[in-house]
Length: 326
Ligand code: NAX
Image (cartoon, rainbow, N blue to C red; front, top):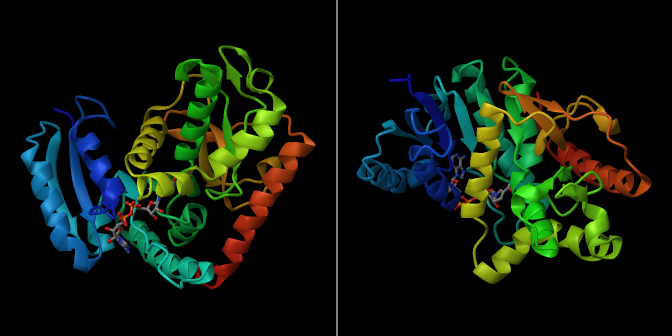
C-alpha cells in the first residue's frame, strides 16, 4: 500500500469543491492505486456544511480515501500538505468595487500564504482557483517566502480547455487532434487565447478556422465564456472548473509528453518581456513534476498587443494590493 498523499482544499463546502472532491477520491487525480488523505478548509460559518460534505465522502466507501479532516484554521489544514487547491475566495457582493474585492481576497490569500509557509511540505504544489486568480496567487506566493516560487500556480486551464473545445467544434475534429493552444495573461476578459502555434490534426489551426472567425468570434467567446455560462446556467462554472483544476494538478504531478504544452499562470522570469515576478499565464511544458515556460515562440504584433494589454491589467491589480505584499 502506497503512503497516502495529503491533499488540502480550501472553499471545500463550495460548488467547485463539491465537483472536485469526489473525483479525487475516485482516483481521477492520482490514479487508481494512490490513497489520499483530505484536509478541508472553510470559513467558520461553513464548517457545519463542510461536516456534511465529509459525511458524503465517507458514504462513498472509496477504497482510496484514507481519512478526511475539516478545519477553519488554514495552518492546521495545510499541515504536511503535498497538494493544495485554493478554491475558496470571497465573491463580488452587491455594490462592491473591484478594488474592494481585490483587497478582501488579498487579505484571505496573504493569511493562507503564511500558513502554507509555516505548515506545508517544502515540495507542496499550490494551485489557486479562487478569483482573481493571478493576483491571489501572487499574494499567496509572496507570503510564503520559504517555499520555492515554482511551487505556485494559478488556474487558466479552464480557459485553455474552452479554447480547445471551441476549435474542435468549429472544425468538426476530435479534441485529441487539437494541440498547441495558449492562454496568455490574466484569467479575465483581457486573457489572450492564442492559436497561432496551434494545430488541428497536424494542420495550422488558424488556416483551418480563418482569421475572421478567430479574431471576431473565437477570442471574445473564450474571454467571455464564464459570464455566458452564468447567463445560461444561472450559476458560475463548477464541474468544468473542477475538471480543469484536476487536469492542471494531474499534469503538474505526472508531466506532459515531450513536445506538448498546456497553459498555467506561473511566476514570470521575464520570458516574452513580461515583468518578472507577476503570475502570468504562459505555455508550459512539464517534466518530472516541474513546469518550464516554453521558449522561443514567434510573437507577432497582433499577439504582442494583446499580451501587453493583459500584462497591464495584472500590473494594475498588483498595484491595488501592493501594500499587502511583504
Ligand atoms: P462557492 O461560492 O460555491 O464556494 C466558495 C467557498 O469558499 C464557499 O464555501 C466559501 O465559504 C469558501 N470560502 C470563502 N472564503 C474562504 C476562506 N477565507 N477560507 C476558506 N474558504 C473560504 O464558489 P465556487 O463556485 O466553488 O468558486 C470558487 C472560486 O473559483 C470563485 O472565486 C470563482 O470565481 C473561482 N473560479 C475560477 C475559475 C478559474 O478558471 N480560475 C473558474 C471557475 C470559478 O469561477
